[in-house]
Amino acid sequence: MTSNDPSAGPALDLSQVHGSPEKVVTVANTSTERVASTNGSSTPVKVNVSDQIKPNGEPRKRKPAQSNESSRSYAAAASADGEPDRPRSNKRQDEKEDEEYPIIKKGSTIRRGTSQTNEAEAWEAGGVRFAPIQVPLVRRLQTAAVLFHCMSIILFVSAFWFTCANPFAWPILIPYLIHLSTSTASMDGNLAYRSEWLRSLPLWTLFASYFPAKLHKTHDLSPERKYIFGYHPHGIISHGAWLSFATNALGFADKFPGITNSLLTLESNFRLPFYRDWLLLMGIRSVSKESIWNTLSKGGPNNDGAGRAVSIVIGGARESLEAQPGSLRLILEGRKGFVKMALRTGSDLVPVLAFGENDLYDQLSPTTHPLVHKIQKFMLKVFKFTVPALHGRGVLNYDVGLMPYRRPVNIVVGKPIEVDGPHGNQPAQADIDRLHELYVEEIERLWNEYKDQFASGRTSELKLIS
Image (cartoon, rainbow, N blue to C red):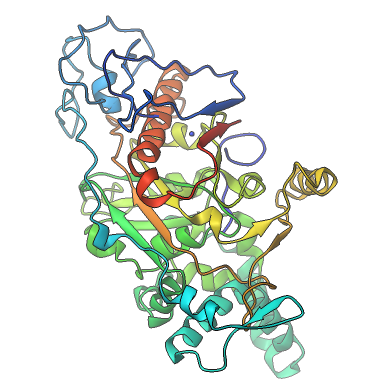
């Protein structure tokens, strides 16, 4: 899936720190590249919260440093001067310290398994390794499930054109096309077409076990609040985002009970006949500002959006061009539209880091193929989407094709950054910058905490670019 930040401007476009002596990291809006920093050991570095901002954008007095080195929520950082807080409908403990990230047990870590055994038994011809004749049926079904998902947009649009070729279907197609051109189901926030039955099909369990993929929970999420999940990285097709938030294959509903999450994608996808209906049934909605506002303002016991969540692939199509195995380059420094929407709707921000998403495909490097990269960026600028020069494995071979490799994907859901209620339609820029900075810190904290467990074969460290 390809999603973009609802901020104005092209496409959509995010650190943890404790140690002794204390280290302060300053984020400059003009920076073009940022590397996750550590204190030279495996211990993450902790950011010292300073220059707190009131919800109205006025600077607050600095509070003396706390002995506890854990980082704070946005609500705590924004009210750390000890002054009386303004009344809130949902009173929270503003001085609540961040919890440490839990250790994920090795038994819950997905690593490569029988795929290497089958590849070792492959027979080779012309430099291409072909799958052995006798492969377990379940692995064939896994491949079929992934093939269906990768080809779904072509399959549904082709089905529409075949239907158009049948004159007897025209009395149905004409009203359908009128409905297609006038429908606002992708952004009205009602989730009327969402089908939990389709989202829970065994098809998606087979899809998830192909890699395999696993969703890791680190903190509880209250069903009385609303959330914006930021998914990183985009990868080539964002398979991890689809499995985590568009299906129940990885157990999102069980891990976060009471949270109704909707994955967001480009509005243009809802103009494709039949495919648009498939997306709506899977609970996917538009990434437009209107859609985010409506989705997070409806539903829940009081119809105020409590228990609702949306998931945005923050880096968008442009970040797909940065997807290289063993690396993690996130387009995040200039992406603040989703932060603004979090302040407008009073939604907590939840960072999500998918270790292994970039390893599912190979693609031509911009360094070795600059002309191809220029063409891709031109397409992105003109058409708002691009086509990565990718290659993976095939259906019956391990070296040539457009299928993703069987490589593990571990999706880690981080700690929510609390927002203390709506900040109006036009939040102060100081609030936006501060919340964005806290989000960046949490992304780097996630990376530093789990990179040795889930990205032990990495070729470079996390880099944040604009």
